[in-house]
Each structure stands twice: as structure tokens, then as C-alpha cells.
Length: 295
Image (cartoon, rainbow, N blue to C red; front, side, top):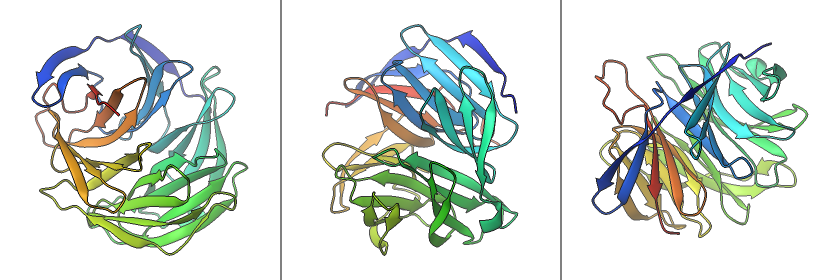
């Protein structure tokens, strides 16, 4: 299947933010920007637009934006091997070849998922062997029909957990011994022992509760010190949680609904965002932000 690409020039606006300093706002026009990943070799940021059904690549030094149009909704992206990105699509896993624009199916999760569900969030494991993805009830009247899955490189699927409404927040501790995930709908984050060699996890335990005002937990990353950076999608902020689950810091952002952050070169922190239906979008909603965060 072909995923045609197009390219355009894009330039950021720059503003000063109290407590953060300079923020670059890249006007990429996403409906639901998600799943950012920094490619150090290319010095480029990759991410997806869930509802726009696109893979995007920003080369900030060249101010160049490339889009690949997909045939269906996409829930997550991971940088893979051989010039490809691995995608969690509606209910299947696919590999997009960035040179040929060909999209190849790896496996289907439809046998494990009810028709009203779609895949949502996903990360490549620390060794690169596994793609851990979550799912969610995509209907307005949401039920706890989502789950968490481990997908092997060849497409073998293992269910890790069930009973989630909106699976999100997948990330690993620096030693790869702990897997984190969240349910954005319930505002809960869990952690569990992780076996990287086998692609299995232990019993999940509560890690943190983040409500509407604090910022329901969307996508997340873990830094080198073990802190969990959670995008507070309902509160326009990043919540930084210590390894014991206590909130260590909060960074207010100019966008109303941040969805995930990714660590880039040097002290760069990239943040994707969304525009909710019915919102009058501002210059920040649906944009990609670049902040400078010492670490």
C-alpha cells in the first residue's frame, strides 16, 4: 500500500515564557499530534497526526516538514530499522518505508479487539526487540475494553493487560526493569516489573493519580534519572513525577492540550499537542513546541 508524501517549508514563532525561557512554536496544523520521537542520526523529529492520518518529519535546521498520508487512523509511531517507522494503525501494526513510501502490514490485532476499539499509544522497548502498544474504546460512550499488547519484531502478539478505557503513557525506567502505562480516561498511572528478554510484565501497581485539574495523563517519557514526564492533556502542562510517583515539578505550556514530549538534541524538549472538536484553535493548539530543559 502506498503512503504518498509531500514536503513544505515551515518556520517557528518564538516567545518568552516565565520560568522556561524561549519556546519555539512550529505551526504544523495537527488535529491530534502524538508520539514524537527524535532521530539523532537525521537530526529530525518524527511524530503522527492521529485524526489527520499522517506521519510527519520536521528537520528544524532546514525548516522542512514532510508528511506521509496514511489510509487510516494511526495511534502510535516508533523509529524502526532499515529506514522504516513502525506504526500502530486502526487495529493493525504496519511498517512505513520512508524511502519508497510503501506501507506493509506486520500483523493484525483485530482478533484481540472489539470493533469499536482502535490502537492508541505505543513505544519500542529499550532493546529494540518489542513494540508495546495500547488500545482504547473509540466510541463516545467509552467502556473499559482497551488493553496493552507486546508485539514481537516478526508480528507475534501477546496481551499484557486488559480492562483499560484509554491506554496511554507507555514508557520504561532507565534500567529497563519497569514498564509504565496509564489510562487517560481514569487519570491513573501504573508501573509493573518488566522482563525485556521475554517481553513480559508483572502485576501492575498504582503509581500516580492525575485528575482533570492536574492534567489527565496522556503520553509520557522517562528521563535518564528515572523521572516520568506525563503530558497533562486536560490542563496544558507537563507533570514530572519522581520515581516514587510524587509530583516533583509542573511545567505550564502555552498549548491547551499537550499530548506527549520527547527529548531531542542537547537540552531540547519537543511537545506535541491537539485541538479538541469545537475549539477555536490558537497558534499553539495543534502545534509542535520546542523548549530548552536542562537535564
